[in-house]
Image (cartoon, rainbow, N blue to C red):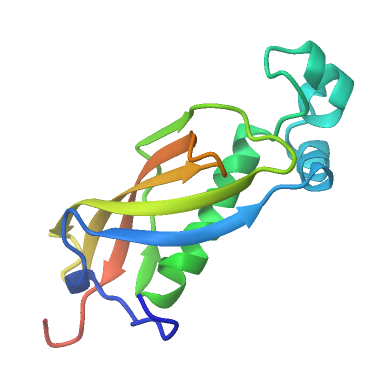
Length: 155
């Protein structure tokens, strides 16, 4: 997609489409700050505790990773769309730890679309969001149904 992003409606999505969501760097300070407030397990707060854990070093909370994925999804796709929110997450999987200095890159693949019978003005788009580190190793995935407005007057 070009620098000038098209505003997207339900009708613009079809199964198989892929969107590059951009990248975000992860710092030690950000890992500790997030963990201090939301997931204060020792391996998210202290490099020594992280080294002593199965994670092999200070690692971001999985919830931090999910939030970074949401930021990329917003910036790369839903921030320039008719998104009306989501009824939830179908699946969320953390594949490997996110460490200080990692740069995460996101992609979204459209798995399915369907009009909502209960809300004629909307449709549901199911996304598979994938996050990979700078080595292209998958760190997290989640399947997320998202509601989008249809264009007024149809296609």
